[in-house]
Image 1 (cartoon, helix red, strand yellow):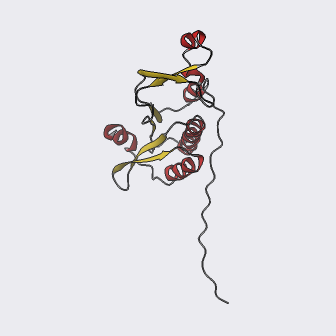
Image 2: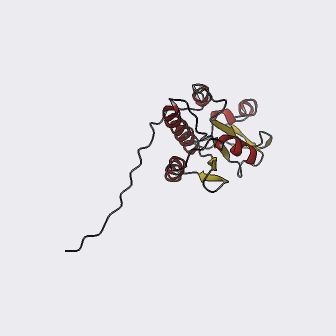
Image 3: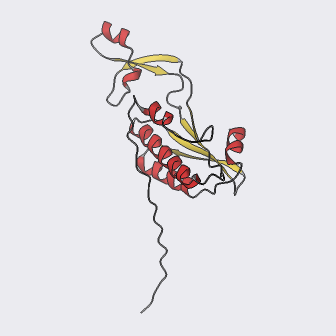
Length: 173
């Protein structure tokens, strides 16, 4: 008999928080950290450049109600660079001496996963951005599917926390 060593690795994903278009902001506000910022959302232009007919999955917030009333169809606002738009979630993995740091870190993973899941669900290209203290550079995981999101969350959980990660992330970004 020949035995070969097998390396198994398992990741336990955080519990998804309930999110919807309406309460996504409330989820962000519910974060109870002593740090100023743990997750920062960065979107692109909000300038309206065109209009089109409503398609399944479009956000209700994008409907132009005044134009829709004048026609038989729902009309949706198209924003500048919409096809190239990417929601960037800046993740601060700054290590602190707080005795609850591990709880905070678990909450950061949960928030990142939940917000990322929300944007995958509504069809937005999204990424996690953070400072990689081993490589001394900014790293980014882009995702549009649930599988890519899971890969990005695993990447986050494999990152080493450092004492100056947040400041370097903000400075580099």
